[in-house]
Length: 384
Image 1 (tube, rainbow, N blue to C red):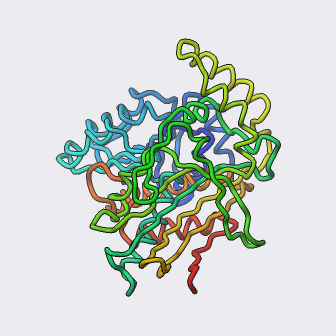
Image 2 (tube, helix red, strand yellow):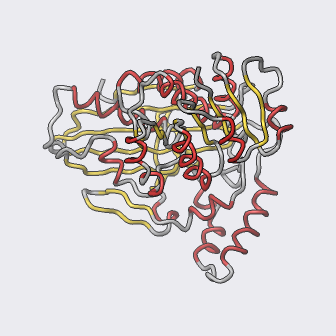
């Protein structure tokens, strides 16, 4: 029987790890601090053991056809994937596919191994929602490449109740601060839309919540363009709008205005040190405390027009709060990773370097689990 090698028991790892153990899989858990891993798994019974993390320990324990799961910081993924290939083991992570990971595709095909990525929340569940919407639309009687297509996908990790800063941190704010200095590329009005300063692209975005319409702030992040092909919208479809971005509470832009001003005027020579100082200050003021509840909102929307008339318009909306099973973020990320691990073991995932699967059966499985975890999960047909 293949073993699962689960690397890392950090904030977003535990619910999915527990799920695999409780589902009867044989798991070796690796963590730098063995005692922390033990504490995280108190009360969990099953076929697992905990060892101190090192690549040497992984190489010693893993064999061909095992599955290695990296819940480690992103800089570990490629070395772990390379080691997995040398062992003959499959690999799973929730992170975006880097160029270095992509470069392992041909080798993994040759070795008949899966290197699965982008199977968390965002990226992950958002991909599943996107695949479901595009497949649904293409099967409809209004599908035509001549229509105009608007695709919007926004995700946000939020506090349960908005504070004066409209945000809380579950880990170091440094990553969020550095992201504010990153360029995004999307499509708006059928043109490439490049944003160098995210705060300059913030706009209001209403969501149809159970209690009525609620406004949030959204902005594009990263490079959305490659996902047109990933979502199979590249086969001649006219794209009027295509955005993957971040969602925040209304008021976030104003609350962060001083941060934006400082980031915008940072001297490159001292930028790293200054960002670390800002990060430490924000962590002290706005980090989650014990027993505080987090919230995740994810929405993916596809609107189609023929001329000026909307002829197809559907939207997924997920709203999840943390609970006794773990934080909302941890459950949505790690339980999706666990599904990917089981899909690899069941030989349901194509070989090579891949992102979240687009096969209908697997998409439904991912979305059903997200529904079970969420407090509110709905597919809205705006024209019904």
